[in-house]
Structure formats: structure tokens, C-alpha cells
Length: 308
Image (cartoon, rainbow, N blue to C red; front, side, top):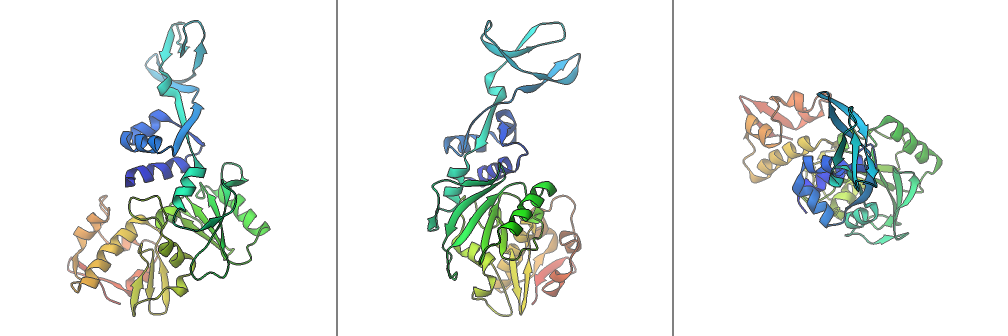
């Protein structure tokens, strides 16, 4: 599955409504939409009954209805004319969470119900348990969406408090890592699935997930090392976490150079390759709000490098 298709699936999971208009998905990426439909990760989810009508040269939301006489969907404009709307324009799709989560956890020994069980309607599901190397017992797994929404996060945090885990509990989420709030309930490990998947894959890597849940058990090089996805950097006795996709991409480029024995890179080139194409030209902007990166990232005269 292409990276674009995986990204689109996660975006659909993060949509405010559980049903997403088909035309919206096709506008984002027609090919990725077709891939998700063919894989049955997106399934028919009813119709969107409101469309934007051009009436008197202004966009106006109108309700689409079915005409049994004309045998078509449409609406009446301001002068009473019937404006037909193609059924594909109002078709909506929803994510098949059962199939999506099964594909995400295909590399794990999972126990529990055959499908995800809702804990909070349309937001949080119990997926069962999985076995992780290093864990004494199978770890319970939940899946959540829209954790960047304050009201949604408050509901999930409330459930953390009412149902504390005995040991570690994993909460996988479609929310990007840099938008996940920090929980005060430390046995709950909230992890963006995008941070633990292989490149262009829907399947979660057991090794990467384990390093996120049990970072102290990972064998590390000294004085510096990193997780497979560059989301965690171990510097001597410190553990630094980086949630942004672009930050991890940047660190990946610099670590590749570091391990190759030729650590120096052109700063402008690595920023561009990491996706900073919006005028970001300094590490202080890339890592805005924190200074711990300065303990191992150095720069001078247009070059940058890792120096632990």
C-alpha cells in the first residue's frame, strides 16, 4: 500500500464525522482513494445530504432529496428548477476499523474479541491484547481517534482514570504524534500509529512499538543511539522524544551521515529533504520551544552534524 493511501486513511480517521464525502477524498488523492476502496478499508457509509449550490452566483448549502418522479437526486433552485445531482457526488464512505486494525496488528499475536469493541462511541475502541517482547503479560490495546480535540482528549483521560491498567496499556491513535497531549496516567502509552509503521505500510513494527513502550529494554549504542523511527534519541543517560514527522525525517538524514563516518551535511539541503520547504532555515525554528537538541546537534558555516 502506498504511503499516500496510508496517510489518506489516517486523515479519514481523524475527520470530525465518521462518514467522509467521496468527492472530498477524490479531491485529496484519486488514486489513494481507489486503493482504499479496493482494499475495502473504506466502505459505503450512506450519503451526504447537503451540497453547495450555485444560486445567484453565491455558494449556498442546500439539501439534496430523491425525486421518485424524476428518479434522481437533486434540489430545486431559487426559481423552482430541478437541479440533478449525480449520486457519486453525495456518496459518503466510512473506515472499516475492524479490517484496518487487523492489518495494523497483523505482526502480533492478538487475543480478544474478533472486532474492536466501542468504549466511547465513534472515538475509542478496545482491540484486545497483544504480546510484546519484554512484557510479563499481554498488553491491552485501545485505539483512539481525534485526540487533538480537547473535548475528545478529556473523555479519554477520564476513562484512563476510571479504568487504570495493571501494567502497561497501549493506546494507538490516528492522531499525529505532535498533536497528542501528554497524559498524567503514565501506564497508558499513547502512540500515533504513523510513528510505529514501516514506510508506506499499514502494519505496525513490533520492534518499533516495543521501543516506544519499553525504551529501557532496548539495547543501545553509546554515547548516542536512536529508535528505528528516530522518534527517540538516547544520549548517554538521557532519553529525548521527537514527535514531529519532519523532525524525525531530519534526524534520520543526520544519523545516516553520522553512522557513515561523514557526519557533516549542508543545512539547507537536509532541511529541504526533510520537508521544510516553507522558509524554515534554522534548527531553532525546527525545534521551536525546546533546547535539548543542542546537546547533540551542531551547526556552523552552513553545515550541520551530530556530535554527542
